[in-house]
Length: 561
Image (cartoon, rainbow, N blue to C red):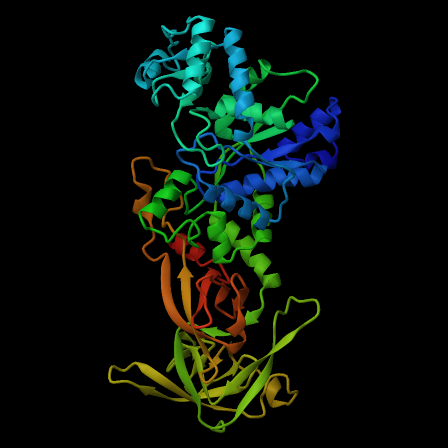
């Protein structure tokens, strides 16, 4: 095997083998098939990157197909959100398709299966049906309705379609093998009665196809060459092929289902049912809450499309399910934002510092670099004045030699500004510091080239001029769950692990250059982390979300535990 072949993942190896065995390259076609019953999450992001990535690698079209076969749980809102997420990740689909596009063809094929003696209408209750299916070690028994006449089956199916029967009274089943070791092959359901309004077909249909019946046939209608599913669909492959066997025209491409493992993410859940529960019970503010594992939540938090795509590439495709540490995703976010996010100054736990020897009415606009990672450096102006805010933990009255920030009698540099020296403090009646007094060296301005400006001091701290500072609401997000695998123990309700400190709302101050910021603008608040502008931000009230810290602080916490 060549070095190139060794670098292929197992899905690509399957495709390469099919091409060697005669599949024309121009017949390659992939699809991403979400069910529009919720918002997409990080697991879907990996599947999107896989399918659309294959499309890019092989210059092959990729369809976006909505599996809209259960109108009781599906909404147009979810369709719109899914399309928005795929586009935001940077991918373009070839055709926008829906399983509902093929409802008539699926019904016609069902009629043909009845005529071939391979499908029948059953009116057993769901409880009776479960009993007669047997167990994995015990074969099932035939339904008493299995040998209805073709004429009676056709009549009942027609009447089901016409809405003559209530929900749950009849189903259409494939007639396969009640003794099959694969439970899914024991006369599976093809249609059920649902008197529900469909978001696309309205009230035209009273019966809706099951996923297994619609899946392969939709792939076939679209001429999908490789239908990629997660590992739980491996037992379904035999049924996928059985259905295709009964409709397949040898002159067309026969879709091939292949499975890859889910890549679960630590400290979160990716079950749409559980995500919906978090929303409905008010544990989060909505599907796009920045603590959610949804793509819309990650976008609102400030994660970038490239970071998510890099994460998907890094974890790759596997045959075995495993738990990926969320710190890897955070690393990818941090790495991308480091290259692209402008540096600005913000103070989140402010204490006032007065520069006693700075002229009362003077103000300066100092030059500050926007991002040291830029190929061509750009700069902005930041205002400086007699009174500034600094971070409260950047000052101590007394400190040991390992404290490299401001103390009484020591010097630090103010970023992009001057060297200052701590002189005294003002305290309230409870002994809390309300004001720090310091002096500055007026010959030490950064970038001036003076001898004083080149003087080495213990540390550099950030600041914001009080006169020019903009007040802002800062939403500091942490992991939604304290346990790395919150739904791993089926005996414990996953909500028991919700982190009570997953959101803290504080008031801080930012430099005036952020006055015109727009939703999803990204910034590095120097020495604090990466932040983005939230959609709740207005001209009257700035709101920022913490995207990720400058380093992984959870690693230290978990190592102690």
